[in-house]
Length: 461
Image (cartoon, rainbow, N blue to C red):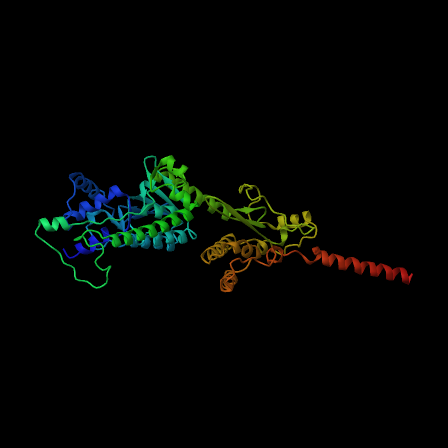
């Protein structure tokens, strides 16, 4: 077959991110075609794998959560490869991920992983894509059951990693094989002669023993990829490089995976789906929550490890001394008076808060909750995509429009400053601006004017 030399070049003499024992599976498929003899046990193993080939449509949508299947041996591209070998391409996973991120019906993504790993080429690019995508939508992963080597590089990029009770993660290492077929060639009466230019052109030839220089070059590439693998896992899992190296490419199962820092929760795919659905529900409820009499809207964006909150207020929530009267972040949303303020409520509020401006119309002062929530989410998403998440709170508190936020983000990116902070105080925003009569400067000027008037009256008398 014309594709066999190409397939052989993807297996032999090139670094792989794969569980060593599972390498026999690939060789069981390609071995007879490449002239590599395999054991009977390996032949039985491939028959079992063929019965578990990946489904034609590996992406499913459950409760607005896209479940992307990552199964079988991973390769950059799966074209011209026997489907019975159970190969999955990084390109296909990447396309499914991009589609899920773009789809407005998808609120979160769950990676259902059962793979021993595979080719190095494409693995780290996909991991980086997942890291970028999780800034837009939550992405969790489940080792269901195996997420080894390249598959774990993918899993580590998720915000949260589940592992089943019988599942495992790890195998953070690199391996390369060279097959010396020179003796078999001689027994077959064949002798290959390579004519080439460039001393390294014939390195890794299967028809000659591996030379010392070729072995050193292959080892150097294995070491380079190992360093890249270690740094990727260390950054994604918030571990030190030494912690990752200390795993020695070992396999970690269930609670041991959590103790090693390679996973977060022991649970099934269903457990992860339920937890992710609950987190999405909590986020939606928090965004839509209205506190008080329609004068204050709490906006929260909870994540697995932290929650941020920003309160958008109008002038009716100002007290007489100019201090903002904020509700507690975690106040229950079902308290009385959570609906839009009525005319009577507005009048009562004016009496309860001396110095507050009387609202001309309760409807004019009430927040459009849906529009405000959409604007806040749009600004937060733009900040994350621009890599300026530290600007999110300031932009929201100031009540800037989406267009104005985009302009400020572009200006911040253009400045090239590694640290960008807002110089505009929250009190200067359009939504939280204090009344002029509450300003200490204005009060001081008024007091001085009053003293001058009093002195003039005394002189006149």
